[in-house]
Every structure is written in C-alpha cells, then in structure tokens.
View: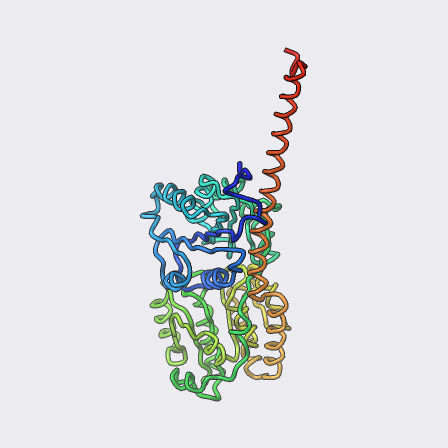
Length: 413
C-alpha cells in the first residue's frame, strides 16, 4: 500500500512530480510522435519527465535523449526476467512518482509490476490501438488491480478497452490524441519539393502517411491507385513511411503497372510540407484507434478518405470532413477520391471543416493537459487517502493508550 511518507509528501509540498514513460523503443510512428510531443510540452514547474526504452532507443528516442533523461537496454531478450529488478532499482534511484507505460506487451507488464514493487504511487497504461496485433494479453490483464488508469484515445476506444481488453471500466480515462495545429496548418504547395518528387504542378495527388506494416493495409492503397490510374493517368500517389512491408509493396506497385505513378518516400521529417502537395489523404487500415495521420491531414485542411474502423468515425465525419468506406472496399474509396479530385470546392469545404474540428477537439494542448491533470489527481487522491488512513490508525492507538491509562479493558478476554 502507498503511504503518505515524507519522501512522498502531499502534492502542494512535493514540487515537480517525476514521471517516467516506459516503452519498448521509439521508432518513427504515430504513438511515438505523440509521446515526443507530450514529454516536451509537460509543464516543467509541475513535472520532470523521463523516458525508459526497454530495448534500443531508435530514431525518436535518440531525439529525446538530447532533451530529457533517457534510459535504455534494460531488456536483453523476450524472456529476460531480470528486467524487473533493473526497472525497480532504476525507479527507486530516480525517485519516480508516476509511471506511464505506452502500449501493450512487455513494457506494459514489466513497467507496471516494477512500479508497484518500487513503491511508485501513480501507475498508468496508455493504449493507442485496439485489437490484433496490439491485443492486451492475459498476463497484462491480471495486473489491472495494480493500475490506476488505462488511457484511451477516443470514447469508443475507451468502451472497447473495457469490453474487450480486460480494462476495468471505472479505471478507463479518455484523453484524445492531439496534434500541433501551428505546425500542421494549410499552406501553399512547396514548388521546390514538387519538382524534387517529379510531380506535375496541375496533376492530382493522393497520399498516405503510415508505417509500412500489415495492419495499415497499404495493399488497398495501391489497388485504389490502380483504379484511379485508369480514369486519371496523370494522378500521382505518395507513400510516406517505412517498415517491413516496403519491398513487397514496391513489387506490388510494379505488378499493378503503377510504379511510375507511385512515390515511396520512406520516413520523412517534412510531413507538413508533403501534405501541402496532396489533394486527398487516405488511410486504409484494418484496425485503428484515433490515428494521428488523419488529424494532421485535417489540421492541414486536407479532405480524407478512410476505412471505417476503430474510432476513426469520431474524427472523420462522413460527408463533412471526409469520407468513410468499408475496410477493403477499394472501388468505393477510388470513387470517393475521384469525386474529390473533380470537385475542388467540395474538397476545400471538407478541408476547412476538418481543421475546425481538430482545433476544437484534438489539439496537442488538450492532450497534454489531460495527462497532467490525470497524474496530479491520482497522486493527490492517494496522498489524501493514505494520510486519512494514517490518522485513523493513530486515533485508534491513542484510544487504546487512553483505555490502558484509565484501567478500562480493551477487550472481553
């Protein structure tokens, strides 16, 4: 049990709370990019943030290592149980007040268990996706009693965690993903970038920004591109992201006869500029929660066409900020794209509505505020509860002493 001891004083007397985020590694991805922004933006007068990568830092971890304390290489292999005691010692040495594990798997299990053993008062798990391959396994479900909060990224995502992933409903908190609307904003196309990518200034462009993993279903994007290519041979298609599917997808583009129309751009740091070149942004995923790439596109005033999966329908309002289609329905997605290619006024209206929605509901400031308030509320609640229990115990002891001093019996025996 967490007790209100001098080393864990009440929030008003504590000073900045030390918060450690526990992940496996930090490659370029939506959840990882959000974590970078969260760590950077948390109020330094109230929080001291740290990052723990159980395995390697990877690209975004190396970026954060220049800005905040970072710890890495604690997990030697999948069955390395010694990681538990390495984490416990690290958390004790760093005097951590709150642990937030990000994603399911090893980090969720070892991070929460170590936090409990280390006496960390606030233990939370943030989950950015739903279902396979990011299923919450039985060992992680068994640790639900140790967890103060499970963070969902949308209302329907929170319901999914409670009904399908073993997260107690009373512990689920919804903190919507947020993006920087000052970085992602409408801008004129970058002509220099257009020329570098060999894009005709008047040709329609569609794009997808997502890691090349099976769950993102880039095959559907390429099938849609092939359908569009028949009607609009001048159209071009940008694939932004990298991953294990890269070589297979390039081969598929070749077999579909569209390799000259598709640009595989890999991981890029100039996503806002690339979005400025796109007339329509697609997402073809088989499963999603609240994908960051769609919010970035909408903030950039780009209409989107996405599969109706997970919580996507909470951000993409069908017919208003974009279009939704059934997973795998390449023909309907292609038809919607052509509609937007051919009706610039409709595309512009959807783009403006999308940015308004992001500013209202999915700003980065709102996401950061949600995490800060959650951590402080849990810490303060535990301090108050623990101190109240301590006062009750002291009162009972005082009553016993008074009875002994007066000669009154304390029991019937």
